[in-house]
Amino acid sequence: MSDYRADVEKYAKKPINEKALAALEHTYRLVLSKADSRYVACSDPEELARVKENFLKKKLGLAEGDLDGALKGVCEAMKADRTKSRLTFYYLLAEHFDKLDALA
Image: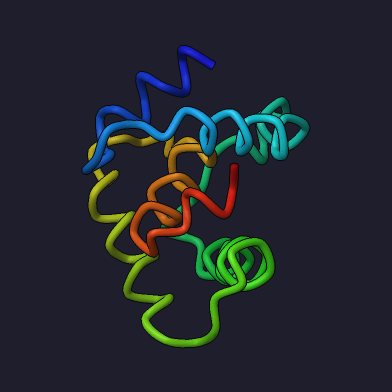
């Protein structure tokens, strides 16, 4: 988890929620183990739509609202990173919506 922690620390606005980070790593361990699904492609609208449906709506239980704005915000925050870690991306979205405790 230390590699993920260091990446999340680069972008997180608050101290790291260790339980939420561990829960994300456990839940998405298979996705993170595959090279083609380990990263989020902000330039791919279909990818962002999947993140919106499967993570924001299903996992975090969010309804429509400013979900697209949050996705754009995280993409903007991570724009310097060519390979946007899915775990970091999801952590930042959960942090944005104050849903880290829902992950743990």
